[in-house]
Image (cartoon, rainbow, N blue to C red; front, side, top):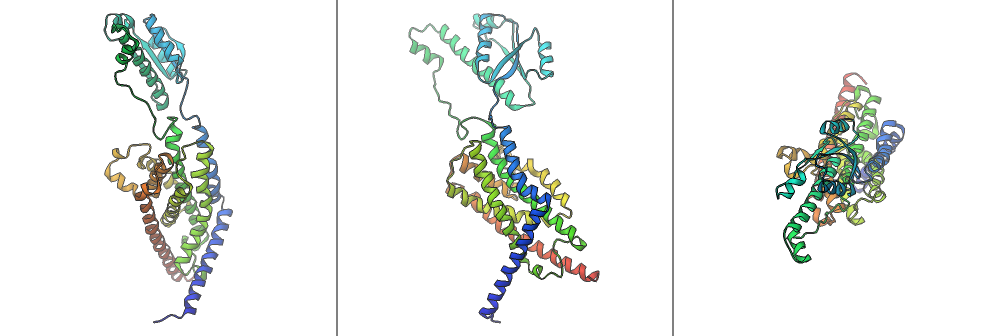
Length: 408
């Protein structure tokens, strides 16, 4: 059976007309529905600002600690003076014993305790090992890191000085080599400030993009079900909804227009405002973000067909947000993630979106260096597009069947 050019043109025209109708209706729904408007526009704009402002200082400084100095010696005072002079620790209290120090920690007046034993200096003078006990509040890892690393750094420095004095060297060069036989340069790779924000927040921004998009699409689909009979996503007896492809295309056009702007704000605007590492070129970042946003849109459309009520998508997406951040391999080493959970993470666009974005924008990788993540995102976009078409078509048949069954 041959089709004339006129009929082909008419079919294309009808598809475009239906898609534009769906696009206009979906765009009105985005602006009219308070929940969809909030997740599509308000949350992507405001939430990254608030989150980034909270961690804008990157690292904690001047963490208050308590000291229990049972030695009262020149070396113990030197140790405490150097700890207090460091940028990360501040000697806030001097306690008489550990019980008083524990009371200060329990009242959250200090975050840790330095306990210097009474035989600290005498042991060192007898060429024995001195001991300094460090007690930290482990409820916040950043304060624990500051307290412990400061004590470790100061103790190593004082140990090198004591070793130098006891070595009997004649020249300054011999003393330097004896204190530090193997010299090294401490260069923090990909995170010059050594802060939490620069390491984790870029991944959070990419996750926010996916989660808010899926939430908004799910709420919009829930509203459509509430407005139609039999709680179906697609209305029956509507000429613009008889074909699946225009429905998917029209909704995609609406979501892509909104998140082309929101995506630029999240991955380019926020890092520039808060001075996160930005090593990727604009062209590479654009080429990578296109398949990521497309994959997230079709993934959200597919998920929206699987939830019956609009409240369910909020419970589902909020529940999986933290596991998705861990499974991306940013806040938890990818090598330590069990194989089963790594397989589960492959179902979500955020896994490869986060990995590729971090490697490009924070580590300076080119687009060729993230080809695996790039093509996986395109594969996800194609697969979720097909699944979205299938589930929307299924919704249409179910709605039409029930309409005939109940005489509508």
